[in-house]
Picture 1 (cartoon, rainbow, N blue to C red):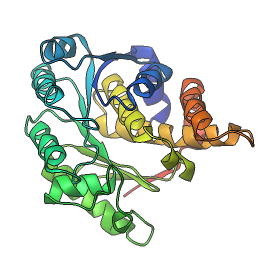
Picture 2: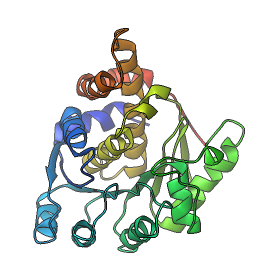
Picture 3: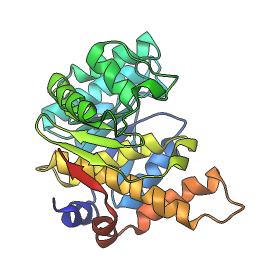
Picture 4: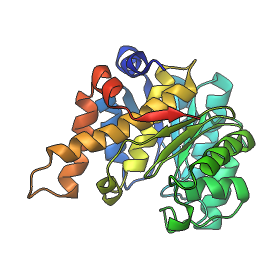
Length: 274
């Protein structure tokens, strides 16, 4: 896989990504999009969602703080993106926790516009099976991808990609990025990333930017984005001073993405394909 050029293409092509995301992490999503070399735009009113989507290169939909105003905007933007053949990333935050979240994620999938679904294992299992073990917006421990169940988890990721008709990016201690034929197993990241609100949202933003900049290689682009997020978590943690905590860590992750070179990513990426 050409990690070097896939990462370089974000800064070369500077894609404009329309985000309809959640208000908890919207600022971090905008900043990490800028840090990787893309540009963010946020428009969540139904009156302009499709129009902004038409101006953008890609779309990222995040259901973390759903309400009756933003759901129609997401559906409108998704339909416009399909019409334009623009890549769309869905982050089904908390799918399985409530009927509204689960049904909204399924409704967005039914627009047949989604290029990649990026979520934790419990969220993806919910979309595939209709029910899941989501704990709030976090994955349940019983669902975790481990070395012991890795073959089974890879098979599930491929099956999910087939059923959902999209690339599936499952992030956690071990990340999986799959289509129906291949599964990237990615081991970048640091456990402390789980103590920061929004690392998943930021990862979805990176996936959207990377796919938009590499439209002919969506699977590889999604995998590279997940690798970059994990590697930046490692780099950022190495830069923390003894008195610094998760607030500083959040900023250092964005800084690490900003300064991450294609050479560093190529050298630091830890992955295999099954």
